Image: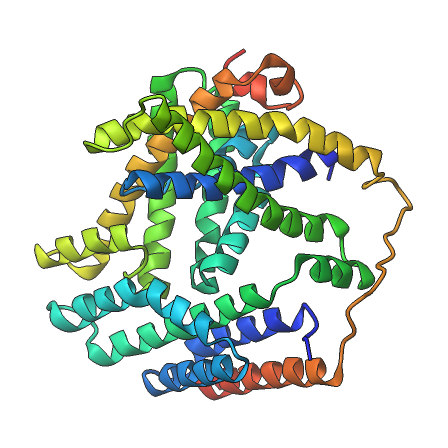
Length: 189
Length: 226
């Protein structure tokens, strides 16, 4: 691994963790804690994104407990789909970034729902579980409620994440962007 | 005596495996009890309290979804899952409180492990609090400039742009300096190996704990699936 990637990955992981802090401060019912993973994929390709995602989940597990480590698979899915978005110039404008966010959200939500149901019996992060509880109370079966809650929250979250990542990529100084092989294509230059 | 840096990871992995292998609800509850006793014996009662505080809302949801609301798996399943989460979270927080990044790096390099992998973990653990502090100072600075970080959900989403952009751009710009620093130090030069000054020793206690954990997990697997 090149020194540039060795320097990028810890920074991208730290962005993930710091964004989680900002979102908590704003009291938003979302995570926005995969923006570093998306940026790493869009700047340096899927392998860098996947490593960023796995290290993020590992470090978060150190802080919050290894109970959440199975969600590392979701990070990998996000990194792969973000790399596809970058190859398809998916960060060239705000509407296109949001549309790719919906694609990433659907993929991440589907994987997340399976993990939530199989490993955690539907009880994971507070916000998603609150939605699951409401849907169960409204008469949905447990698998349907877990799936709907996971996909709905991931859809909103990843649309915001890719929109923010797109704004950041388009605002990146040319000198910095030029150092990454995937950056120019990601923003359609 | 301090354990070798790898031993706590083996222990946490063992607790996670046993939490799902032991028969519910008695197995996970007994495991959680064992972890709590170990935390108290190690003088880490605070880790147990911290894990309990993190898990409190989840325990509430488990009782609600699986006990109170119709169609759930019942109270025994809720208790078992709550105990699994409690055991793993308590063990993880104990690991974090005893984790020394420099000792971990020394242990990894003395074993001949990839220095890149160890560096990724250690430099992330050092970068995370720094970026969190930077996020907090950006939040304060933008508030001082009149940013409204409250109100409707849409207003709060919009507030994310002036908060996240300076954080992300400054961090990505710094990557250049860090990459150059690594290059100058010959981090990836071919044929260069790192010699740890004080490699942590693997004691008999470490070996007993690791082998004991492995035997317990194997026994539980055979008993469960055999």
